[in-house]
Length: 270
Ligand code: DGL
Image (tube, rainbow, N blue to C red; front, side, top):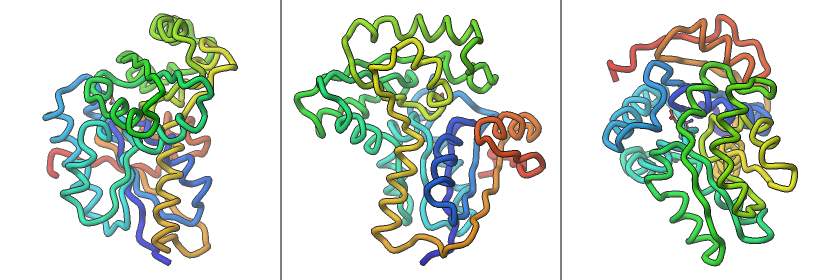
């Protein structure tokens, strides 16, 4: 048993898709979440900048006595996982391997799509993992840079003409590839699952990277006998920009009211 909290971070609100699942499958765990809303999106930046931001995010989270960190960000996981693992003496879990593992178990025809940020696609991390786990399968990737800013604006529901149009445009080429599985390779994208599902159709299975990273954390902590004792865990939320904006959207995404629970920090100090 281990009562230390689990740290979770993302460039913004997308990592809450991992928190939602962590709280569902590990309700006894204490969670500390940091969303770097003052610098989102990370996905259009260089690897150097993403690493600089991710190191600061880690340093902030490591100011708490954590038992593990979940990098609930496809962009950071794709570009910096190994570096952050080497620099930290606690388990650091990314989203790429758990998501690819799930996709390879779901696909029947071996044709899998990936939507992710530009930096994630450019890194080739999903492709490398995919080829290592399923050498005969084919991966078709598409960068969708407008998805993150739209989600951060709360423009993610069916019926919103802007997100529906953007999704149709981005997904058109993947629709022609006869894929039966689509990896939502950025933790913001599961918040668009309904919109993306409408475009792709019911025969395409969607893989939620946030949820898969939470399952990977559960597997790891169970193996290490490091789960928390059975009692209700708490979550604390930190953001690098206005708490009101963070709390409003985070409450919607988590389906839980977190008003007056977030704190703003100055990430440049870390
Ligand atoms: N949630 C992040 C990811 O998974 C968003 C990246 C961004 O800020 O562009 O990639």
